[in-house]
Image (cartoon, rainbow, N blue to C red; front, side):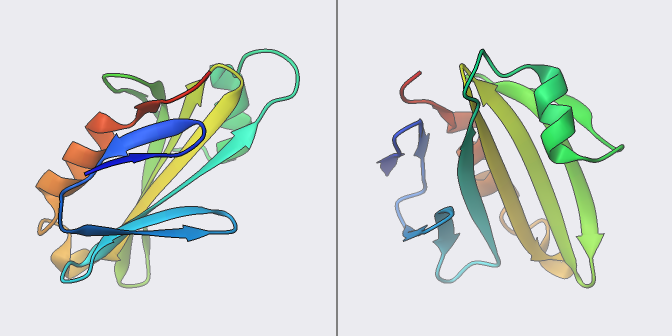
Length: 126
């Protein structure tokens, strides 16, 4: 299933649901174990740089990520019994922030779907 926001688009497994919230969009499998959340931030002057991403992420454990359509930085963390993945990606004058969270014990259950969604994330408009 193709989903397009004003700034980005993504291909989702057909059985995944979409929920638009005031601060972004949530994607999930109703019978699954985790959820994606994607939101965007606008930079008023100039293109988003890697340094902007590092400043927004405000973390020291960042590693570079190069996806088919976007690049940026990523990190992961354990929060109680959950595993969270974070991506700060740049496109023109927008930051696309994507996160995925699920229980640590279920981390491998949606690996393929998580990777498919992430790899399909691309700028829709610049």
